[in-house]
Image (cartoon, rainbow, N blue to C red; front, side, top):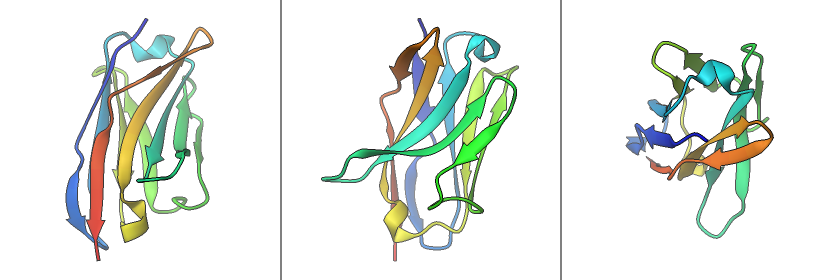
Length: 115
């Protein structure tokens, strides 16, 4: 099992930046894949970015070139650096871990981008 705690959300103006953190309760080197998803009000939860245990990354087209996913194995933390934020990036952002073919989710952190 793993518990995930997200932090770093907040209110930012369009064009600004935020860095989200997702801290795991266990060594993330044992986790095959970690990801960020987001859910805007009234919409489904959408994929944002993933990073594997081999540091291979993947991004949704809507964030490619603006967001960067990374991880710090010493801190058991995965980050999402978000630059050039747009109002349409407003959502609750969730961290996800694929551990032994079971998915775990954090509680989410709110990101609001004002125009």
